[in-house]
Length: 363
Image (tube, rainbow, N blue to C red; front, side, top):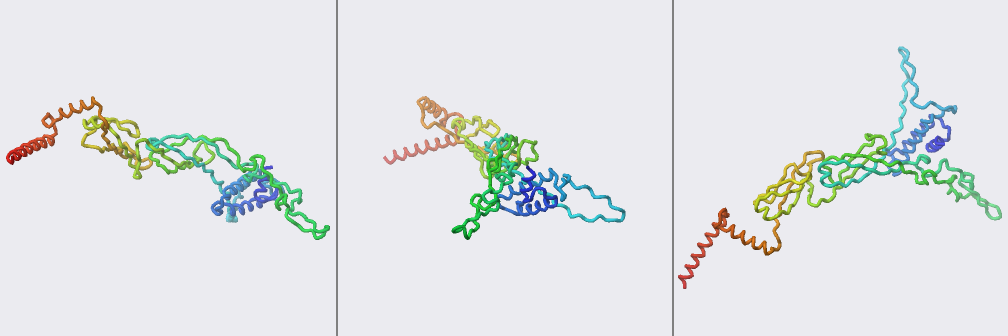
């Protein structure tokens, strides 16, 4: 029966009284509480102790006379008589809540999802402590070893039946009981619980390495068997780079002639494409408020663009003809020519004339 297993978990014989159960629980809780016991098995053992206590409380403790005691809080004390003070009662220690299960999940996000925030649906299955064996993996109660009648030792006869001595029982490893795997969990101590499906909202501005805690008590019943600890990883982006200071950068190759002509091009932002008018004297541009959030849930920072003018590496015949026409159309004496080019051309021609005259005089 479940109550017999619960008594055994607390180290008590079936039918132990309520004071004995509470005393056993206090003693074991003091020994196995994770705040005092830092071993790996402490949390699981404390959970089984609490579950055993709750099982006996729900079933009703047995009093010293063997009658079931009523479950629930004790009856209220009778009212005090005038001028009479009720005797002080030492408050009973309530069993601490069982450690909440934490489900660790990893979520990979694109840079756009991290910048703008997104909603993710997390699905999975978790394992829970086997209720049949309270997580021990062994059948309870363990039957006594028939080879040694539960004593853990057997007699070994000496020479001619004389000088017999006691030795450890090999069948039960001197334990006195036969350990049998729990049929409910196959000896694992855990069983698969029902699958969970949780919808979580990831805030804007999360970065790789951030951990987000989702309190399972705020979810709807059946959504999750415990709390969620979500670790964020950002996927590499094809053209955005996010530096340690939170600045978003992008290098953008553009047609060199479009850049020289001051044409408009489409540039990427986390929210989509956006038009940008180029200026041939500029290579660096800043788009305010189009970058990554400065802090989690904070305003978005700037997007810094680096323009890389691109020209053909090899010119076709048609392109050569067009280039020749362009050179003629943009000569120093053409309308709208760069004043620096015109001044240079005039200075160069004057120097050439003077150089010729000097050569003629020396000849």
